[in-house]
Length: 398
Ligand SMILES: Cc1cc2nc3c(=O)[nH]c(=O)nc-3n(C[C@H](O)[C@H](O)[C@H](O)COP(=O)(O)OP(=O)(O)OC[C@H]3O[C@@H](n4cnc5c(N)ncnc54)[C@H](O)[C@@H]3O)c2cc1C
Image (cartoon, rainbow, N blue to C red; front, side, top):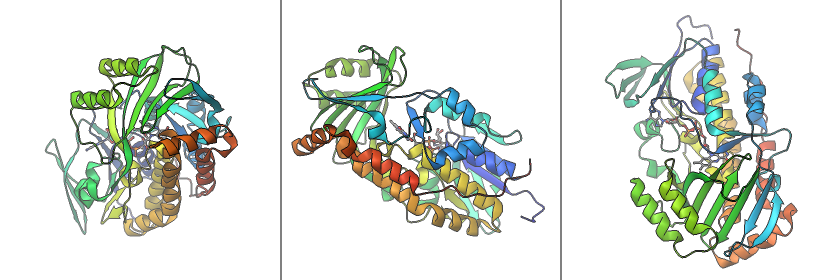
């Protein structure tokens, strides 16, 4: 770019995609402001995966070694029937499609913290605030913050997750873009009563799934209680969420009653319906979306973090190297749409495997477990990753 004035970007959201955009735009000389609703970087959370081309993003940011040092590793998964009897124990790589020794699984909070550290000095970080209004015009976007401040930016990037507020302001209500995948879940941590280490345990009956995940050999496990739900469940209030999950799992065997008790006691309950975001366009005027805000694939794909990293990397470089935001947004979208849609389709393959909805689906899934080479989700993830090569962009002058 020959322009002498520094171009100004506002990035909404400082989790995965947000810090990556901020890192690269700042390195390319942009004036970057990041606004994050939470009072600080959100810590904790389940492990997420960085595979294939997403590894190239963190490698080019110089973060690979730090991430390797905090990686966790699930080696095996045991699938149980309604009474808790083992159906099969399989290598988790066959299920999630990672390549052992190359791909990374990182606790989400650790990844967010490392990406946050990679935001260069000079980027303005505003925590505990949010965009209240956007006015997109020829010369820029006038932004009013919830705290009352008004500023003007050349572009606004929404990296604020599946329930993106930026999307609501610039594109319309979430219902237009949200595709419900037929189930809901409660996630929380619990004590590791089974003494699990580097492994998952998945219990199913038709339309119900209880998953326990011990990424290491510590005394806590991540629990997911998932269940079929024909429409997104709208409860926002945690007590109502807990009651619904408890009622849904009432009367079931194995360790389910203990898990319900653990859910009631948990202080980190996370509850949502499982869905994806599908948008006809990822940008409107000077506003663009990235990561879950634009194309959440759902955790069933195991690729949400990867495509958020890749999307942020590509969008930042297109903005930095194209003559205008119009060209940049077009190149970002045309370069990534097929890859993103391929990743979103992984969820259709994984859902009947992890949460069979009917007796027939469950029987088919159990049959698959007897021949792990036929597990479809691992192959789908590998195929999706292999379908994209991260572009080479000019490396910015430091
Ligand atoms: C239970 C579960 C398990 C998952 N497992 C995996 C997995 O195994 N592998 C994987 O790759 N992915 C997984 N994911 C998905 C992964 O977490 C997301 O795809 C990924 O974090 C997307 O990153 P993002 O930066 O786009 O959005 P997010 O990580 O959602 O970040 C959005 C940020 O925006 C902030 N924000 C929200 N609203 C506003 C606002 N109004 N103003 C300012 N800031 C705002 C939020 O506080 C947050 O910091 C899982 C998700 C869930 C829910």
